[in-house]
Image (spheres, rainbow, N blue to C red):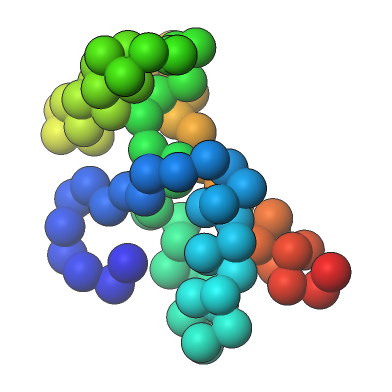
Length: 88
């Protein structure tokens, strides 16, 4: 998370991603470190098949590379969600 890479992402369901982030936060990583993490990875295009999921991931990588302001939103788990999960 604290690497200089332009694209940092995590694959998995929102629930799985939140669980992993919760554990990482318990280890002392600040919530702000997750602000640039794309998780779950890929654009929310309603992908179902593995091929569609791959397209959504590559599309997000291209958007980040080009600093695009596309109309399709990335799927992100916010720092606030992580902090709420830590309190529960």
